[in-house]
Length: 97
Image (spheres, rainbow, N blue to C red):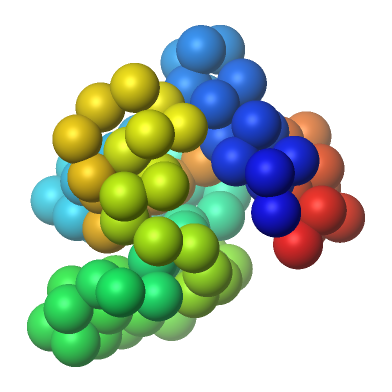
């Protein structure tokens, strides 16, 4: 699991990560997100909104991880939703989950 959080950290440093529910939903609508990640401890409403938006725009998503760990891996406060905008980071993350 630590490898996956490292990939998230690298994606953030490379500017290929979008965090926060509203920002991720807007980026899904804009066609920027290649993979949405919803934390396992996200609220039911947050999970439902992201899943519905991702389904509508045909963007893959996974439910994995914890809000606190997401925040720690990117050096910010806890985050419920992450969006990766680069295909290579998405593939690396999928391999390590």
